[in-house]
Image (spheres, rainbow, N blue to C red):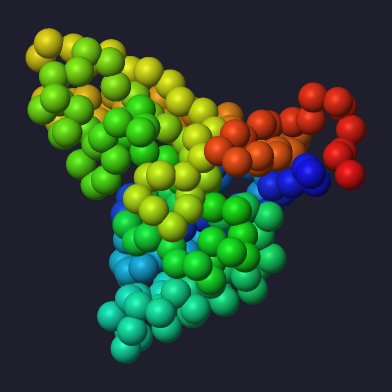
Length: 211
């Protein structure tokens, strides 16, 4: 199996772009091994796009409502992403599920504020609190066609404290999530990665590229 590399990043955002900022900050160091070459969004006027503009990174917007069908939007955003020739697409708070045209063309990295496979979906923090867990956390995964169902790359636990509400817990998870995302993207860029079934391995245990 060939070891994939992740030097060129297209990052997708839908909101404030704090994960994007963490990647922009990390990639300012050439030793990091990855560069954000474009930032895409599904809406205008968001801070994530402003962060990219301030960093001198090209941006694009593809709104779902501008297309008659979801399939046409899937094709359009895939074409925009592909035009930047990314090695890796990072979904950083992007609130749309990417379709087959993107998933089949590029590896897509995603994060989730829970320890998958527990509590997938849009309310992972709320659901974990409601369930009464004592430990939750965050997950970095490769996206697939499902909802938070792709192969897991890395996870880190975050304790649930007695006085936590959803907002407080989510903020504490986000701190860990940003650090873990930056770490994993950098390692994937520098060391490469392989996928076998649901197992993702960063680097090559044999120390050379597989044939």
